[in-house]
Image (cartoon, rainbow, N blue to C red; front, side, top):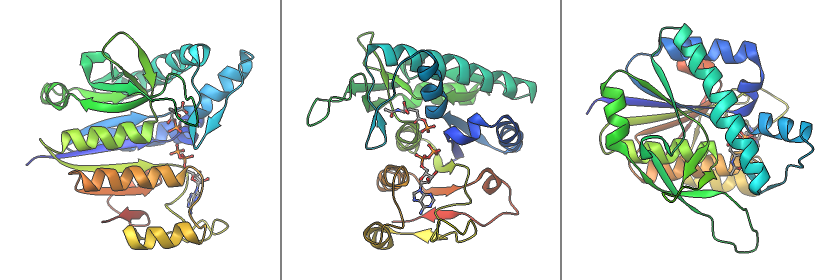
Amino acid sequence: MEKLSIIKIGGNIIEDETSLNAFLKLFSNLEGNKILVHGGGKRATHISSKLGIESKMVNGRRITDAETLEVITMVYGGLVNKNVVAKLQALNIDAIGLTGADINSIQSEKRPVKEVDFGFVGDVKKVASNSIEKLIKADFTPVFCAITHDGNGQLLNTNADTIASTIGVGMSKIYDTSIYYCFELNGVLKDFNDKNSVIKTINADTYKELLTTEIITDGMIPKIDNCFDALNNGVSKVHIGNTAMLTKENDNFTTITL
Ligand SMILES: Nc1ncnc2c1ncn2[C@@H]1O[C@H](COP(=O)(O)OP(=O)(O)O)[C@@H](O)[C@H]1O
Ligand SMILES: CC(=O)N[C@@H](CCC(=O)OP(=O)(O)O)C(=O)O
């Protein structure tokens, strides 16, 4: 099996032009088949507030009413995605920006209303791995944003970490797939005040302990849940760290194992 790397970048990297440019340079130098997935939650919150739209998050997920869906479509699918694609083109990477509606790559279903009504938020149902493979085989580099569709004309907001893990699961039938979750810290930290206290490996047992002791909190919980979903469904390797983990010299990051 050929190898495929899926790299997801978080909102803080996108917000900082210098970090984004440095990351894209590293990404462009990465050898082999690759896919980029980006979020942009911070930018969406910022632009919403400029437009007088309040942002509400529950369990790390955005409550997406019709107005918010318009904002996230413009921000993720337009502003962020097209800037990233243009920057990659400048680095000689033949990038193609996609939502899940493009080439019907990611179909989802609107999250059913239970205790919380998340609005236009989608849970992924199907990844068109063969269509995505065609792009890769044609030497295009797919750049996915955090938008999916339901197949009936409705766009849906889907967390970017989940997009990375579900694309990973889909592509693992064709490629030996690794996922790299890049964010602003060096990895999952044992002590939040010590940026170098990276936990090198986390497995299902140590994860439980880290949850009980509240060393892992907030956005890191759904991120690691996504890592386990990926590993349990065919993805070979999952890592969490800063963008330097894409260089061969750096081994200071977190690896999630079963
Ligand atoms: N033990 C931990 N180590 C590192 N980050 C943690 C930890 N526990 C909670 N976090 C939080 O998780 C956040 C990353 O999750 P999130 O904001 O969803 O990531 P992203 O920026 O990739 O979308 C970090 O910015 C940090 O505030
Ligand atoms: C449903 C949901 O919450 N979607 C996310 C999608 C963006 C995202 O995941 O961005 P980061 O990776 O930068 O957090 C949101 O709108 O915030």
